[in-house]
Image (cartoon, rainbow, N blue to C red; front, side):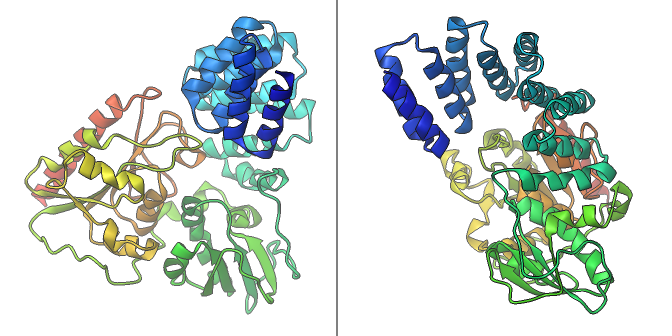
Length: 443
């Protein structure tokens, strides 16, 4: 039993979450009162994005040891993932009553308040965590995201450099100087890639700033962005992620540019477009009589599932003047077949092999309806009118409340009003869609 518990913990530390869950389960089959196995299995399941199962495990652990601050903290984290913020707050406050000088509990409480759209309270909790443990990279990272969530980019962008202290994102080094804001006229600079597609698309707007300074830019990116990014001003070459760079005058992380240049929200140019289609579409939409509306309803499942149910979006196709087209990629494009919706939605995925293909299709649309995914960033960067469906708590870049974004002037943000429920957001979407149709019919 203890050997199985130890095996589970060892596998968990190595990232073998399936093996860890299996070992914890076998330990519990021998002794169902093994509190550590319940709690650790809950942590492993949480890492897999299985929020409900994680919470069930943490509740079992709590039933066995209700006075253990570590279990209370894990319980609070599990409640947070399920959107039960009041219960999460209560569990973490109880943990802090037992151990008030534990920075991890303050950090976890801060994240509960962040997810509850209470960023000022979150910031205070993270500051408390960092006062107790100044070398706490996760708290410093979450603090930077919270500042940017509040729109405080003047402090948030420099604080964003805290990401390099995280184990998951070690800093890269190159045999030439890191750019710190020096003059770039006639100089070459290598911008290295990091994080996901949406991050790269969002921060690509700052490439223009370097071009205006006279730089020759080599831009690293994921291969499916290369054709699109090759057309950015000042970019002499877009190279795949991990390319060995022979030489340049400077280097910088793409996502560090606004911090290096000391930019704030007023430097986002009002969210004006900065990307455009660079190739002819592989599928040309020839219907000139109907309004062309694109749709993306699903994205990756972790750290949280941002998807909206396609069945509740099919009403967008009910108007005879609307041609509904799917830009959905991956397994979830099969939702069209599952729902027998092929007569209602044209599937454009066969015409997409990279983001340049997606841009060519977006350029033909009158409107895009999408969840929070990379296509939303691309549409915003191109100035495509977009209705963006957001979770109750969304990523830092969408701020807290409001229906507009300083990053993209063409986006209208439509937010859940309650965790896990699309009811109000979809009602708002259909209302906005009807208004948009009426305005287009008048034009």
